[in-house]
Structures are given as C-alpha cells and as structure tokens.
Length: 616
Image (cartoon, rainbow, N blue to C red; front, side, top):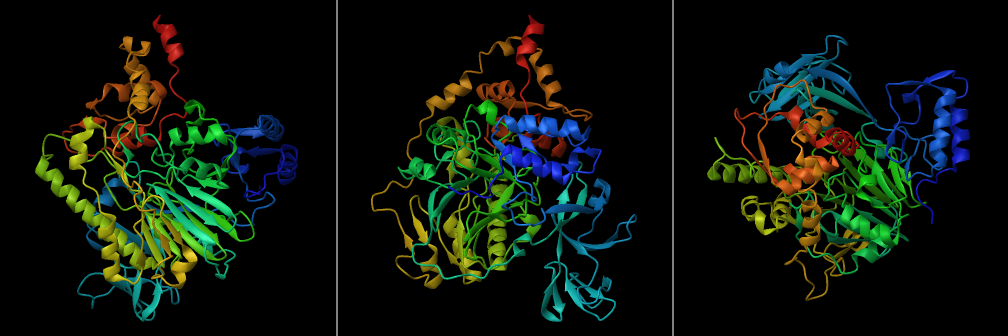
C-alpha cells in the first residue's frame, strides 16, 4: 500500500539530512527538522549539539525502528510547501487587556511601530492590522458611524466594519485579514498572524467529476467517520468502545457491528487530538491486536497526541506526525492537510481532506480552527455542536452556583454555541453541513446528577437554525448512515444521496459494560504509594507547578484521582470527566493552574518505585 508520503529508509534519510546540513560546524537543535520525535523522545530545543553528536544520536534512534516519524518538508514525496507558522505581533498585559473598552480600540506596538485595531464585544475580541486593503492607508475613527463599529481610511475614505471585518464602503468589496487573538497564561492578550494564512490555496485544484459512489461518508459514532475516497479509506477519530475521560463519558450511539472490520480496512486514520473521546486507547487496543501497523496521522502539536502511548500498552507501530498547513499526498487524487486551533494550538487540530478537488472540512473540537480562517464553499463541513464538554458549572457548588444559576448559565451557553455554529456555517457556505462529535452520555448511575444537569444541544435544532439563514444542506447522522457526496452535490433531494441504516438497527445504546473499566480504576485505590502521606508532596513536586500563590480544595472520586496520580495522567479525566466537586472563593478562574494540569504535566509519570524505596 502507498501511504503519504513515502518515508526514506534510515540510511537514505541520514544522507539527506547530512547533505542538508553540510558546511555547518555547529548547529542548534532547532535547525533540525522541526521537533523530531522518536518513540516519545523530543529533541531539546534549548541545547546546542555538535553536528557529529546530533547525527550519531539521530542514526541510533533511527536504528530503533521507532514508531514515531515526523515528515520534514524537504524529504522526497512531499510537496514543497512551507509549514504554517505563527508570529506574535502584539502583546497586551493582563491590565492592558482588562482596560480594553467595548467597541473599537486603536493600539500600537511601540517596538515595531505597527498599528492595530481591536473590536471588543463583551467577551469576544476581534483584531486586524490598521492598514487599508486599498492602498495601505491608516484607519481612524469614523465620526459618521453612530453604532461605533466602523473605521475610515485617511486616504480615500474607505470604511471597514470591524465587528464583521468587512468593508462597507465600497460595499461588497473586501474582507479585512483577521488576526488570531489568544489569551496567554496570565490573562493577557496576544495578537498572532498565521503564515501562510490560507495554506490550502497552495497548488489549488479544480473540482473534477465524481461518479456516484466514488466518495462516501459513513457515520460510525460521536466524532468517528469512515470515508471512502476512490479506492482509499480514511477514518476520523475512532472512539467505538469503552469510556472517555476515566468513567465520565460513554457512547450515546450504538456503533455498527462491523466497526472493527472497518478500522482494519482503513488505509489511514486521522486523530485530531489527545482527548480520550478522540484518542480512545480501548478502541485502538482492539485495532492494534489485529493491525498494529495501520498508518495513523496526527498534527505536530506542542504536547504530542500520543504522549502516553508507551504507558498505555497499546502496540501501534506506524504513527506519523505531520507539520501544519502542508498538503500530504495519498495518491494522485487524494490529499489532506492538518491545521492548528487558534485558541488551543498546543493540542487541538482540524483537517481538510481533498479528493479530485472536492474539499471536506472537519473542524472537530477546535474553538477557533486556523485562527478563524477557513476555506469557503467546501463540499462537506462537519463540526462539534453539543456543548457540555466541561466540568463547569455542573461540578461546582457554593456561592452563586445554585441549581437555578447553573440551569440559566447552561441554557445561555448552549444558545451562544448554536448561534456561533450557525453563523460560521452561514459565513463559510459549505454545500453540506453535518453536526457531529457531541454524541456522548454520562450513563453511569453515579453520574445521574450530571446527566440530568448537563443538557446538550440538539443537532436538529442547529440544522433548523442553519436552514433559516442559508441554503446549506444539512445532515443529522445516525450510526451506519452513508452520504454519497456525488449524488448530494448533484441533487440534494436524491433519495439515494443518504442511505439510512436498515430498519430495526439499534441507534442508541441502552447498556454499557462498566465493570472492566472500573476495575482498572479501582486497582489504583489500594496501591502501596498511598500508604505514605508524602505521596502528595511527591506528586505535586513532580507536576512542576510552582511560583503561584494558590490554595486548592478539590474533592475527587478516590478511584479516579489515584489512577490519575499513579499514572501521571492529565487532569482532563477529573475535570472534563465530571469526577471532581469544586468550590472556589473568591470565584476566580485560575487559568495558569488548570492549564498546567490539563496540558503541561511532564510526559513521563512520577518515579514511584524510587519514592517507595526512599519511604522504605
């Protein structure tokens, strides 16, 4: 089988790299192909190494036949594109960010002299360079604008509505290039520019004719889609058995009975990020038992998607880490590109799949995929829709967190999410839209309160909202249903465009096999580690969170917290999995703390063997 792109053998790869770096007596590690990762090892960026030492180590690692490969843009088989990067254009301190007024704000980077415009609407901030697209003029406040949303160019009076980033004079002319706005670890703001901003436009291809049945998309469950693309098969995010987030999430839909055969027949699998409703080790364990060498592709995120592979015990041998914003060629008709999230670039990704010029956009769980810049008029777009993927506010109590307040907050957040998704679909105008990646349920009896409180969006409600504002065709998928892209693009009313599962097919799960997974968690409860009270100091020393004055009181289910502590897992299992009960006074969200324990914990677990030896 040919998989994208072909990887040279270790000797060939070493020759290519040596040739590339010839003439350098000393190099920094970041001159090597970006973040070379082998068997979980990440080449340290902060150190200097001599050329001989670098490549003796590199060749040694290659000789291990490790399962992690990062494709460098200079290797054969890759299109000569530039990996997408981000540049920080402006930093605002927490105080400066808090001082932003509602509406239009004019700001300047004093170091570079560059000017920017920020538009604040409650908690949402949009930003752009203060440069007119016409002839590079500077924008100033438009005194004729009574709504406080427009700015006027000093050269030719062009007007820009910064609430929409569209020019209103001349009307229908341009859209302003928008910058990515991110909150930093201390609640300051960063303005980032993606380069290139629209990497999918490199080497564009015109849509070709598709035969009926040539491209078919079958929904399996949650965020898992099985794509038939000519004679290739690609699968997204296979969570098809077991729980996610320790014991908090379980599948709402009953996957088709042949799901494992479908996975085994795939030519490649894309896993968007490390959350366990997308990277499901129970699912991959069953797949690896039958096909350990199946090609799996992930983005080059700061925290590796498969950071916990070795500890999981799952034997997968063909995991490929690819750079952002570069087309990966599968065959002459099929290619794909992985993009980063603008809000969580350290862990979240999305993907564009293109077959014969027809694009399929899957934004998965990204909060602001590619910083808000996405291809328009794709053939098929799919995204999350449900909400409820957080412990807030269901697991909080005390103070304002009454049941009435929680219900109102959840209702308001659901409405905001629905409106955002409907607006995004209206702006992008895909031919077809499919809401997915939200079909989970808190089914364990001990989570009855969470299940009843954590009301989620209805996909049909979102699709109805989309239809009110656009002509986009919508598809609410059911397990085993198949969409024929060619038929739907030609005639959305074609009765064969979407083939529903056979009558009598079980759609919703009504039972779950809790016991084997709870047994794994319970095994940690009586571990020898917890006989010594000093485990708490040992654990938090290992975690590395310091220089922050904070007292934390968190109640957690004993089996889950001890399983997480023993194995050095991220706290998503506790927080997103609804396994904690929290009170906070004052009512302040400490981003630094939660971000560290949900994303930045060490890649290897605590050395409990050494701990017990010292305790003994």
